[in-house]
Image (cartoon, rainbow, N blue to C red):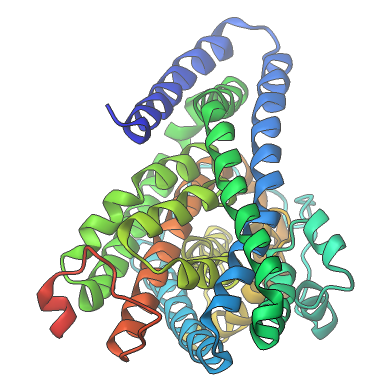
Length: 423
């Protein structure tokens, strides 16, 4: 059995065992919070180990990729295509969330006592500001950006350093080779860290179930089912869009993505899946230079699941409080979310922060967030997995786009069909 298949089976086993143990603890322990705290320590250690990898891995792979392109115009071309796709994908995700919440209307006849309109949710909403966006975009120090895992800041610095190394040429070859060695070393560290993934999955699920039980899933069952159905529809749309460029190869891509998808879903963290997503894209045949360029930017600008959740959850809360939002107001809200979702890169619990800011701007009680907090972990599982799907497909499409343009530095993904290549 392949090591990757073995790890996938172990993660699934950790998920199932976590549900069982968590539910037993919820029923038998008088105060399961102590057990949940202990499990949270295990999960936190694993996620911190992953975060320890991400900054040097992004820096090393991106710098080497740009430096070895040898053509600054290629960086600009790929960057332009990347941002164009991300804006399109953002519009699709936000629009789908808005459409589905209006069709399904999960907030109507909600059999749950509504929090008082003036109650505090504990989530501080931050409005969009140029200062906040620049703070997350341009690093005052690359060391500070790496220390705080500000991926977008690391990308900005890596762009400058990679272009500079490419301009220097032969004199920088030793440094480029050394940074390439760092990238390979960090991928090896990733394989060590992933040994603990099944334990982390078990701890994350068991800790969550032990405190809230499974009853909350029954209480919010209809809402969660409708959200997961909407997420499934988004997956289908993304896969169909991928098929336009990759043909049936998109199925092979999703096959390569199964491990990072499962990891993101079970830990409710798309960040935890970053190293494995990068490996999966390279196995699929995406040029390493393009994968290491597009994927980090996607983690800041292309969180499809999180963006769909923003429109879905905001209108859901308005429906719960009996507030009708005219179509014009909903379209305005969607445009606002197009901007605020990009300005919140690196903010903890970014989706809830963005939603809180949006509620304030449109006169919807912020207390409505309390309706979501109890099941937010389970919703975040779906959002995180969707973010991985969206970024994986986007990266493969950009690679295919480059290949169609006749760029020799970007060979087509190996799993693309002949039909797709000729399309």
